[in-house]
Amino acid sequence: MWRSHIGDIVNAYKHFSDDTPDHKAVVVFDSMWHSTEKMARAVLEGFAMKGVPVKLYDLKVDHISDIMTDVLKAEYVAVGSPTINNQMLPTVASFLCYMKGLAPKNKKAFAFGSYGWGGQSAGLVNDGLEACKFQIVMEPVKVQYIPSEAFLKELSEKVAALD
Ligand SMILES: Cc1cc2nc3c(=O)[nH]c(=O)nc-3n(C[C@H](O)[C@H](O)[C@H](O)COP(=O)(O)O)c2cc1C
Image (cartoon, helix red, strand yellow):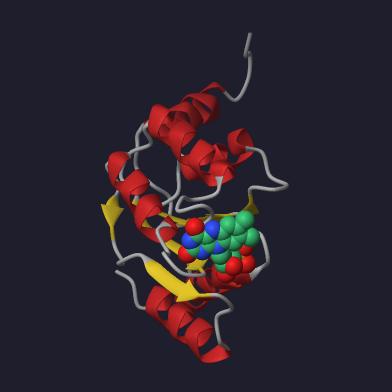
């Protein structure tokens, strides 16, 4: 039973539930050998250059429930996975499935990921973001094996230039 700060609490609930995003970004990834992680860090850098508060989540260590707490009020959601066996990593598929179920609204999103040959993951993650009914603001970003410094710089600049 709340006996004080009633107005603050009601306003906080209104804020959590009104689907209006805060000006912040969430970058979520998993990576086997760090190439997709390098891309994720370049995306993080891009949002920082843009002046958007941003958090980086590694699906190997961060729980999807904790990530979703931030996603619910985020304006941007960037999700990365390498390609494994013609797919995205199962951790990323699990996260996308969970996010689709919770149906957060009004998100701008894009996918990224490293690959070796077929390179399906970024496209599949993009499909997952579309299935969440997010506005896709960048074509899926793919790189074969290890991204060069030049590629990462360009990626940061592309993110910094997003609407
Ligand atoms: C077990 C395994 C399976 C893989 N399967 C594919 C595949 O089906 N298609 C593909 O394009 N690359 C495949 N790759 C290559 C990785 O996508 C590539 O090494 C990528 O750079 C890994 O990114 P990461 O460093 O973010 O893990 C596979 C790699 C491993 C280790």
